[in-house]
Length: 254
Image (cartoon, helix red, strand yellow):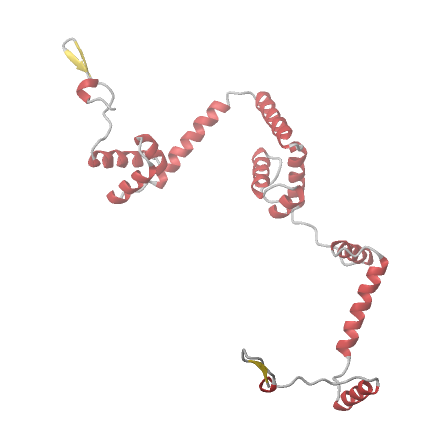
């Protein structure tokens, strides 16, 4: 429970020493405080944290008063915070920063069960060859966000250039490459034995031959039917539905 300003003031001799600034309690006071925070460079989230209120309430309050964070002031505040953080971290020597970085990578490698240093180096090598980010992430086995983070750190440290060379063009389809692609297709389709491959090729040849045949004529149809009847075949004709027997409940009636 917040104390009143009179209770926070402390009487000392001939004057009065004021206590901390009282928090805004009315809506007008909160709007004025919110306007000052936006002018200082606070975002909606930062203003809510500074006022000790929820973001939903602060957003509604800003919308009701027509207030918005100042983008330029927000950028300045973010830059000032980054500069302060950089000043704190720059106090460490390069050797100490490298040692902390190596210890962090070793701890993450032990936790994930992979060699992060080798993975990061492979990401840098592939990027230097001109690979795209999705291809690098797929080849290394990590997410695009992690690969982008490694590349950005390498560019910032000077290991990589911002603009890398393009990838070399793909070679022409030679017999060796064609054989390799055929073997890969066989592996993916689970065709492993020579007999299965031969059966697969025979089926393909049969489909091609059938597609190349001309349409069947009426004479050929009549000849096929005559051969069928000569072998003892019998043509069955289904009766129409009106001629079928009906079960009326008392038995089947024709």
